[in-house]
Length: 67
Image (cartoon, one colour):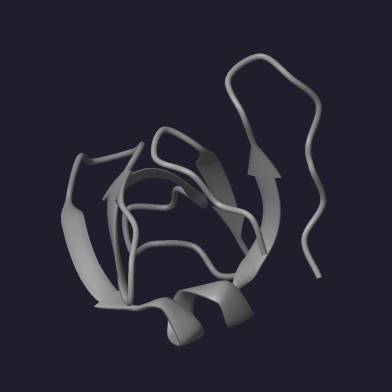
């Protein structure tokens, strides 16, 4: 899956604040994401986050689609 810094990810499950969209801040073996609802930043293993991605948006472009 091709994810880059600045992408907006829509996840399958929502954050406790109610938002499903996250901004990618860092990529590598781990992802660092910021919730677009409350601003909380989390880090976790790439494999865990990739399983939960529904859509990936790059700026104003159309969704790239996730597996």
